Length: 280
Image (cartoon, rainbow, N blue to C red; front, side, top):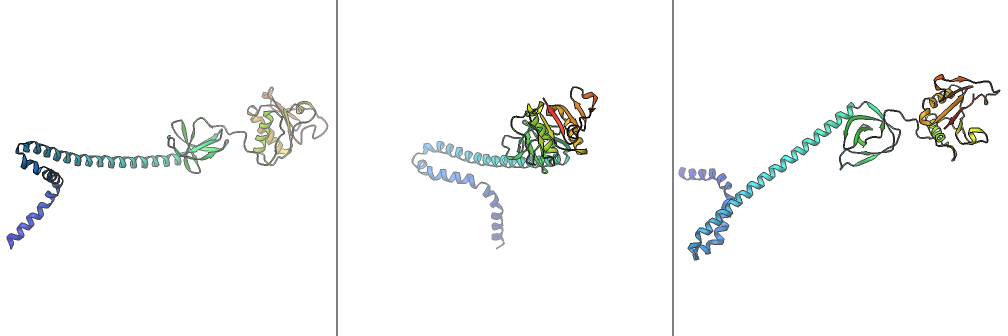
């Protein structure tokens, strides 16, 4: 009995080795079955068949090794891809967290998920909107922060200067036929001071008849805020001169600041109830 048990244990230990050679043996068995009749009929073919069998066995072993190496490469590529994606997510999160520089969009822009050619559009952002930038650039795009998330926009459409214009939301407008600069003055003042709803443009005399002047109906300290806002942005708005509260400021004599004017007899004539703007 002991001897029988010893033989079973020996056989059990040899099973892994049998498994290792199972594939090659299967190849040899197949070759033997196919060529058995040939060997019996023609002994001279033995050497040729043996060579073929060896070749088939070698091919089987090489195929197994090739598959193993291929699987290893696929696994390495998958791991590298996962590593790269994780590193990019970490870098993006850090860039968004550190973003402090504020710039302004100068045109409507598409928002992209990243800078690559396979980026997905994630909406749009209007002109004149403030955004934080991370400082990262790639492939003609720059990274900005929108609602706490990383987005990429086309480079060249962000400015350090806060735009003068904006959206006029109070329903006011100026008539067609006025100069483009009057349109810009109206849009800028309307966006900044939406409570002002009366603008006088065309009338039958002087610069108003030419469509290059507008009266913005406002008074008191608010009137000075409007006048100073326009004066600060005169170049962008195409302004030639301003009149308010019996005072005038002009581009030609800008270095003199606001200059006093003679009394014209009434609050309206002396421009106490409106800011007069003449543009180029």
